[in-house]
Length: 443
Ligand code: HAM
Image 1: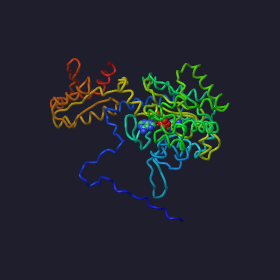
Image 2 (image 1 turned 45 degrees about the vertical axis):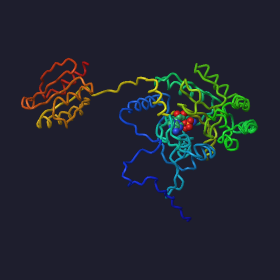
Image 3 (image 1 turned 60 degrees about the horizontal axis):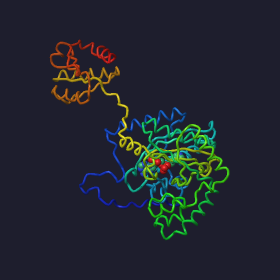
Image 4 (image 1 turned 90 degrees about the vertical axis):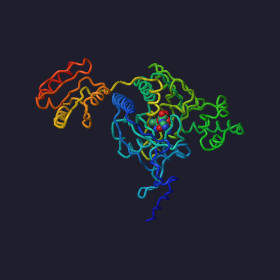
């Protein structure tokens, strides 16, 4: 058996023993508690939206064979060329952190014989993906995607429905100001002819092209169209447009897609320069941008399209498919930018305060009893003074504070303080749960 080569481990630039406390890696973020309500809101909305449309959740590994992504996304793409977190694993060879989910969904569809299920198979996912991009606004090295994939059907109505779902999703999360960009990049055959046309056009202007575009001429001509450098941008207007080079079938498919969109009143922009950065696409491609954005690649909230050849290319039977993924961090930034209110989360309605050692013990037991009864209750057993406990209850905007002190323990009672009216009442300790349930039901 050939010996597997051990990966060469480079020394980190800053040794662990340098005395400095460890820092976050560039492009990686902590998601702290104040941000979590946004995450829960987006995740919950995404999940109920997807299941409402008949999609089932799929869980996929974060680490896959590098080859899966090289073959699916394409060797000459930015993602595969420069952005993957890849390493050699002792047993499994070349592996990479997933830069996206579609390739894994396609692999899983083949591995689990999902072709034998009723078609199309409709799957959704939500989780982290990794791309070693230059971190800047809206670009991180670890980010999260929520996505839908429909596998096993080639009808244009599906493309239109996916675009409609994507558009409606943004209304559902209170971000209706978005712009839907659509294009068709046709079949691989028609694209080949178009690429040559594009190269001929740009080659004549080679001198003005930026260094990256000079490379794109031979490596990835379609990407010439979404270069952000001004001198290259100005050439775009005169460049041949892919729609003029579509084969009859792709043209017919695209006309039907936009016909359906018109029918269901989904506003869209026909964008002849939308080419997407992944090689597996065929026919329809689309993105959703914030309404005020003039160029998608820095700020697209969502991207997707049809990928009819991918499953066969990965070794499965010919199986058409389409889908999209949305960038969760970008959605959350946009929600914040637009100061969009997110629904308030349920807060504890009762605070249990205690004073003195005996009361602490009794309060601990009462707290557990209330939790068992599904009463949402807060506490801070480490505090001794009533004043500081009332301050916490105030901060948490809690209406009722139960107070257990030395006297209450001796009397077998508990004091209820209504923080809104300031009224206090004493009740039998053993009736606390029933009394509090009554109060909460009346509120
Ligand atoms: P994508 O356009 O590469 O497509 O990514 C989809 C979305 O993920 C983007 O629109 C953006 O919101 C977010 N995103 C991508 N890269 C980053 C990053 N570095 N930082 C923050 N957010 C980012 C795909 O991944 C395809 N798999 C979509 C698809 C599904 N096509 C068919 N099915």
